[in-house]
Length: 258
Ligand SMILES: NC(=O)c1ccc[n+]([C@@H]2O[C@H](COP(=O)([O-])OP(=O)(O)OC[C@H]3O[C@@H](n4cnc5c(N)ncnc54)[C@H](O)[C@@H]3O)[C@@H](O)[C@H]2O)c1
Image 1 (cartoon, protein in one colour):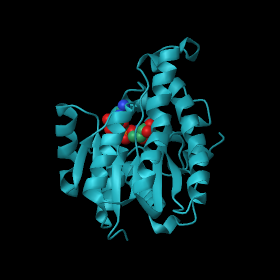
Image 2 (cartoon, protein in one colour):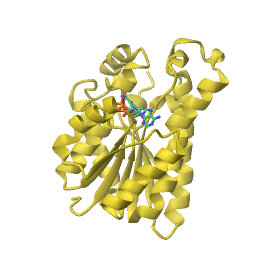
Image 3 (cartoon, rainbow, N blue to C red):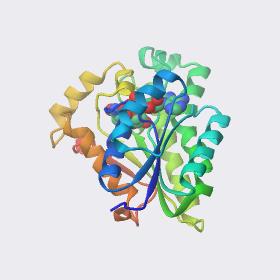
């Protein structure tokens, strides 16, 4: 399905990462890939090991809060790929204290950091990607239900996800109307135990909640694969008429009223 296509993927840390499961599906369908990870030998070794089986064209460091890192990462993509078709943004971070203290205690600095890493980075990466993307290309980000509804302790990350989802609509409109007609969508995943999710402090309790409420089974190993397969759909031509959407992949959890 993706023979001859190339994807630049941000946000794989290990083989539990949602970005890894999206990459796995892209790989199974013939897509060539390049990856980015946080700078530092420890991260680079870890991500190189996790992505080895995909035989990536490159792995390049990038802290998305640094404009010079973003420029350098896309320079590598230009050299290795020339042009590419798919951008995956699977990145989020909020300082630990924001999950532990009441929302009312949010500091200006914590607000800035969460919004910068988790939402602004989509805009910055999309802008850097655009000149290198082929017509009809697709951009995908990962979001969470807390953007819309109160979720205990999610606090700043919820605000960042709301900004991220709104950014998807603005980017989708602007990029869809340009000559290249790039699509931009978000995948809203149900709770899955990853490093980032563990940082929220409540992941086991959240997964229990999904197990009890979601119409379909959620919280087992297949959940991440469901996310990967929905990512494949949104990033491929199967979703050629879909842009600006927040698409839930959560076993139906979000439709429950009681
Ligand atoms: N796991 C879940 O339950 C869940 C549910 C819904 C949405 N999501 C979203 O999925 C995305 C991926 O998270 P995950 O759960 O796979 O966890 P993960 O920890 O595997 O991935 C998070 C990634 O963000 C990267 N990152 C953090 N700060 C960065 C920075 N400054 N520069 C560059 N990269 C940075 C990390 O290196 C890591 O690769 C996030 O946006 C997360 O909010 C996760």
